[in-house]
Image (cartoon, rainbow, N blue to C red; front, top):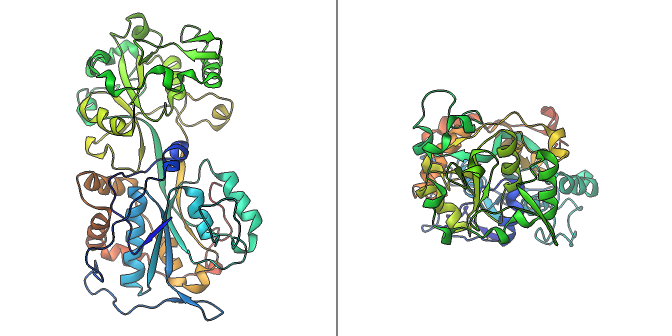
Length: 438
C-alpha cells in the first residue's frame, strides 16, 4: 500500500477488468508522484479552510479515499478529492492498493488491508477509509460476501453505480473505418470468413515473432482449457492429446489457427488477434472463432510492453478492457457478440459476450453519519463511459491523471456541484447494505 495526497501519475495505467486483474495486479506495479507544488488547488474559489471528520468519540481525521492503481480509478479518485476538499471543505487522504479485495478491506477498516490473513480491525468499526470510486465487483463476490458476513454491522456498501465495464475483443479505427457497409468489422457477422475479412488486416507473416510468446509458454498447454474447448466445439483438429494432456495445435510456433479458411490456408487467410499475459481470453476467442466461423489466428504478446505496442503498429484485433488509456488513441470499437449468457458461461460455453457488469462507487458504513454531504456526492455521482473514454484518450496522449481530472472538473464545475446533496442512509433506498458483486 502507498499513501499520498493525490492519486499518482504513473508510467503504466491499468484498468484491468477482474477477469485478468488477478495476474497483472498481483505484480504490485505501483508508483507515486507527490504534488510538485504543495497546497495547489484546481477550482477557482476553492474552499481553503478545511475540516476533518469527527466521530462519536471525538476523534478527528481526514476523509479517506481509496483507489486501485489504474488510470480511470485515479481520475475518479482525483475528481472526488476536488469535490470533497475544494467544494465541501474536508481534508482528504489517499491510499492506493494493487487489488480490488485490498481496497474493500480498507473500507471495512482492516488494519492491514494487504494481508488477507490478518483480520485485525476488520470488525471493530474503526475505519479511516471512506470512499472508493470505480470498484470492479465481478469475480470477487465470495470475497465481498465473506467480508460482509464477518463484519455485518460495519459493512461497506455500494453508494452508486457508475457504468458498465467492458473486456473483450477490439478493433482499431484504422481497420474498422475501411469498411463502411454492413456487416461492419466490429461485429461477428463482419468478421465471418465468407466476407474475406483478412483483406483488411495485416497477414500473420508480417508480425515479428520476437515480440510473440511461443505456444509452449501459453495457455494452449492448459489441459483443462483445451479439453473444454474440445467439448464445446468438437474441433478435434484444433487440439492434440499428449502425455501431459490436451494442448492447442500450434502453427509456426506462435499461432493457433481457427478451422476453416484460416487453418486450411496454413495461415494465409487469417485475421490476427493479439492478447497478453499467457493468453488472456485465449480459450474464449478459440470458441468464438470456431462456433461463429471467424478466421482468427490467435497470438500472445511476449510481455506487457509488446502487448501494448503490437496493436499500435499492426492491423489486428486485440484484447482490451475499458476504461483504460492503453489503446485509447486508436479509437477502437468493441467487437460485438450475442448478449452474455451467464448459464452458458457457467457451463463452459464462452461464445457469447463476456459479462463484466456494472462498476460501482463504494462507501464505508459510517460515512452517511460522519459526512452526509460527502455521502450525498458519491450517491449522486454520474459519469458516462463515453466521457471516461475521452479522458482516457487525453491520458494516453500524455496528460497526467491529476491534470485530466482537474480539467474535467473545471469544465464541469456546475455538474460536479449538482452531485452534492446531503443524504443519510435513511433517506436513500436500496443502497445501504447492498453488496458489491450482487
